[in-house]
Length: 126
Image: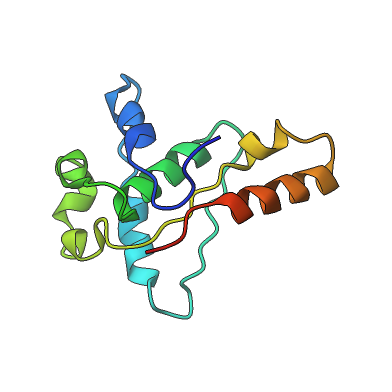
């Protein structure tokens, strides 16, 4: 069903390739400023159809050790930040899109069981 630990950056690359892409990489600069602080837990919420998945894909592409995203971000706003390379592709990332799990489940109990089973079969962090 997908790679959940240290995924690649292909989903964000698709967004960048789209004609309607709008650079929202300022979110990364805000997130970088919160790392290793008491405010490190960030909720990215938006109204329906307002780019939550794109934001999650962008954060995954930026932070995931599973890919090299330097070139992908080099023309975006975040590249001008002093912390751009400090955090780029340096972290273990777990990316779970709940829509994928919801489509495989009939109710909340089945969803929880499905997520648990998937996690049990998942990759180990290195």
